[in-house]
Length: 375
Image (cartoon, rainbow, N blue to C red; front, side):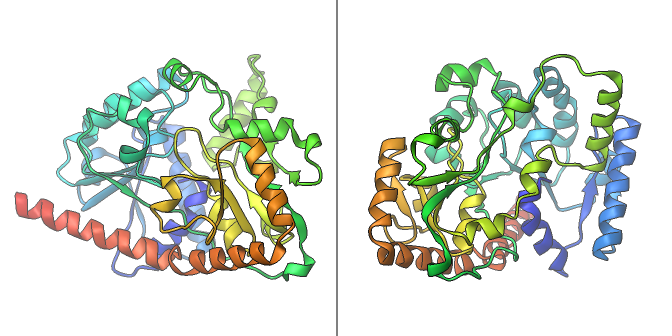
């Protein structure tokens, strides 16, 4: 599970009524699967959390009531040949008589193959940080054959994201964070969006940073520039394999930054969204630290209950309008502070982990009960 979903895992660990079974990657080789067991042991050892076990085979999974899995990594992948190999896993899990919930993270990768695999899984519920079925034309174009209902499962901020600097201690500018992920290769994505960028606004701000030094400090990292197209050496391939087995992050340098300190050092911040209709986790993290968020006007925030001009600063998606909003709020710091304060309160109440995940688990109980009544 990606690090940005750690608050969800923390919540599950604290919920005494929930028993967790971790599923080893069913399509992985022996070394990869042993790596899964080693990661689980390390995690249990360092967190002190006991009572977990690992499911090695498909029949072991059926002992659970709910199977929760990520779409990317289990049903699709960045490379087409690996995405196609996920079909056997999807087909095997599809035969299980339990509730299957799929988080549609990175659903745009090899989208047609991923959609076919998802259909083979026969999911009972799909979730993401925005209701893609309602708001994403790209999703509807490629997942129309999947009949499962869609629900919004918002991001929550980890406990460490707290305000500790006063307004007077902050720079009256916007800080822009996030990473530019690797170029998209899927023809379906590139044809639909007419770009290879998953976060095109991040690219534009990254390249225009020197033109707006009075308005922003750009801390975006360009992961794509670090990718080497040439075939790596055998030593490098072995090292990469070990990193994947042990769960090392591909964005290690990005995570070395003290992001809590960064968000506490600015009055405003932005973490541009994905073009496919999903926000970045940074928006709740920065708001939790008392900085005013600048995000695109759209349903991904309205659905959560966020009101433009109250909980965040909305703009139309262009650099020109974004910078105009920054300058407007630089001239009116009291108004900006009011938005930052309201946003922080919203994140620590409406989007707190207990509220979001408690409601989600209750909905899963209802899903299980309805499934049992139909049998």
